[in-house]
Length: 456
Image 1 (cartoon, one colour):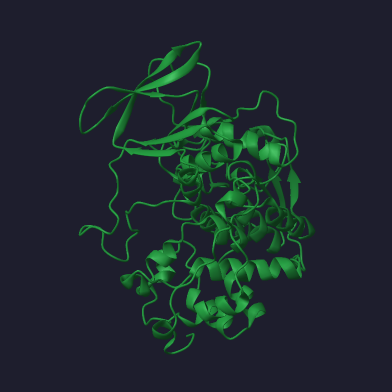
Image 2 (cartoon, rainbow, N blue to C red):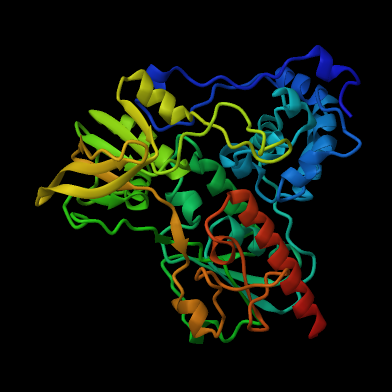
């Protein structure tokens, strides 16, 4: 464990965010540097519990107490080895994961959990600073695997299989590798230099990336195994009158365009919030990302609508530890928009129609408690209500069964109804977290390796 009495001696401390008035004028990551000694002190707070609930709170079953202790003892290279034993990409999870591990930390009983996410990110960033060292396999199996999709599930599977000695090709239909890591998450949450560094390492390990490529059943026939990591890219729509008015867009379309602009790409007819009254429909992470993007673009006002009731400020009696706490969360983006006097968050409200002639000028809605019709003035509406499943054409062409929700049906080992076809991440799980995608990708890689080795 860390220090025997560390959890009693030291308070929880997290990195501070850059000043709002500074960060809303750029697309850089929002956190200030956190001193290494402070990180080590946070590692000292870990108790190495007899039953470390953080292991199971994390979908990757990260061996968290071990690397907390190694950080406390200033043994950073051993810490990254312990972290990589279960997680290929801690530089991603240390930035964008909501940290269910912290919610299940025993210290969270007093709302002072160990700062696991900060420690993880610091370990990962230390490795990035030293330079990622490729770990190519010393032998080749001569077997080939196609991975379709280059999000976290596909990348995790690809890296594991390449390191096992297989010839891995990753297909991505977009112009750059990374999936939603590349175009779905704003740079102020995930700077893309960490993604580029990891991709360079994987290339040196033998992974072949083919961007701008949507493989067909025939293209994949030559591979010994196939992993479908195509995500859940079909957005949930809102079929109400006025949906076809100009100014009503899916959130991911909006976020992707801004990510391309930050990358230096020209974006024709870009959707921008500059000077506009923005309504974001959906109260999750994607909606929050829209808020942060809109405030940086200079939105006049932002209203975020959520159909669910407002969560409480603390756990309810039916939501005990170590479950994920169903409480109200205020993101950095909410903080920024509120500071500018531009944000309104409304709960338990249903959208009935979009109003306008040619372009949207208002949203007609009904609060579920009063049932009184209201109008919210707007010039731009962003639909951030989640995703309903993967685009099924490739999976069905390969003969894969879909489940009742339209996801690719898989077993415990991520195998589909077709012997040599596997699926991982949102394509089989439904919309979920990056950490679950990595876990699924690793599990699929293990199953593929077992299948290939059994047929030698």
